[in-house]
Each structure stands twice: as C-alpha cells, then as structure tokens.
Length: 91
Image (cartoon, rainbow, N blue to C red; front, side, top):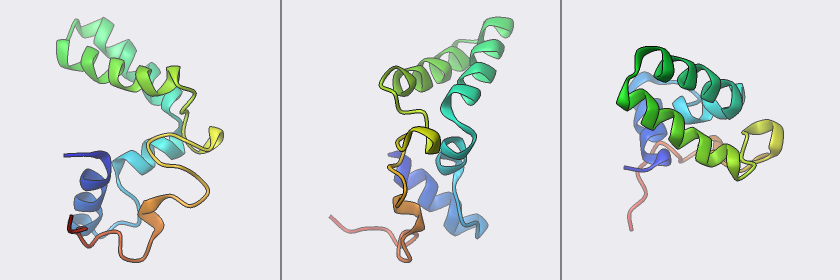
C-alpha cells in the first residue's frame, strides 16, 4: 500500500479533507521525525526506529513537506485535493 492509498482510505472512511500523510506534510516532516526519533530512542522500540528512519529518508532528500514544496506530496497542488481522489484509481 502506498501513501496515496493510505490517505485515500483514511479520507473516505473518516470523511476528512486530508489524510495522515497530508497532515504530516502540513506539520513538517522534520517535526514529526523529531518526535518519532525521540520516542524510538527513549523506548528502544524497533518499529518506532523504522518509522523515524522512514521519515529521515524524505528529510535527507529535502522533502520537508509544504514548507519545501515537496514531502509525501508535491505542493501547491497535492493529489489529495483533487475532487476524485477518494475514488480508487484503476490501473
């Protein structure tokens, strides 16, 4: 499952205008990474470490979210704002 599928499902089920990855882009990947990194270290939790490392990969590419113009989506016209986004695309 990819980022778009996760956001699409979230938005359809919860009837929200934005999904979790769009929210992360809005908050900023650096901020979300700092929280994940802190708890991964504090709890010595392997899954939390994987989550932090996943975010770090985007940060290392300069994909910081809305503030850099790219995160999980490209701005100023992210896919989740398209009218038909919540309808699953057929290959």
